[in-house]
Amino acid sequence: MNAQRCLEILREIKDVAFATVDRDGLPQIRIIDVMIVEDEKLYFCTSRGKEFYRQLTENGQVAITGMTKNFQMVRLNGKAVRLTAHKEWIDRIFAENPSMNGVYPEESRYVLEAFCIDHGVVEFFDLSKEPIVRESFSLGNTKLREVGFHITDDCIKCGKCERCCPQKCIENFTINQKHCLHCGLCFEECPVKAIKRRGE
Ligand code: SF4
Ligand code: SF4
Image 1: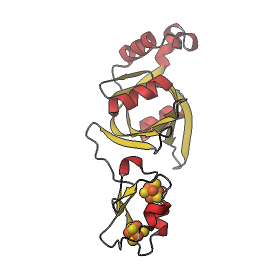
Image 2 (image 1 turned 135 degrees about the vertical axis):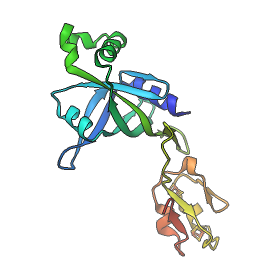
Image 3 (image 1 turned 135 degrees about the horizontal axis):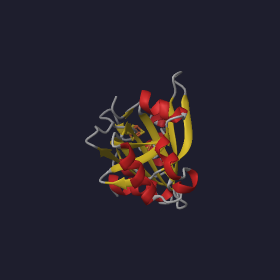
């Protein structure tokens, strides 16, 4: 698994959820087609009249997620940038997604603007595996933020966390981050508060 493959999964799902933030700081979400994926970049479009377009041009922060029928989930948090070579990108998007001609026939397609996400963090989460598998990747050298939990030197090796972990991903008083749900049960159950959130 890598960042490119994660974006390809979003392209294969095609209709994925895009979340933005509006002028009042409230979350907004809708289904948008992933139009092109190449070179660790994701391309999509929307029309200039939509609130989605306004939110993208005023803020640009977008969170995207989709799940395959096999319970593989991809999540992307990044910054969407409007592409200046407007007509060329819309023509290319229509060439690669011919069904768009039925929605925006002929010249009406140019009310659409194309956007690209090439910076951000992408996360893969496979719920079909036992234990579950999760991995995070950087797009465009974006710094990955550590999330989840880790066991500190305050551990007295009582073994309670290993016994309560639903994914059995604690071994030798170390959390295997690749299989951790981030559920926090070990954090709650540790008798000496030796488990801390990562990155804090
Ligand atoms: S529950 Fe806390 S003290 Fe016990 S083994 Fe786990 S981290 Fe260590
Ligand atoms: S956060 Fe949940 S899944 Fe992860 S190690 Fe702790 S108990 Fe296990």
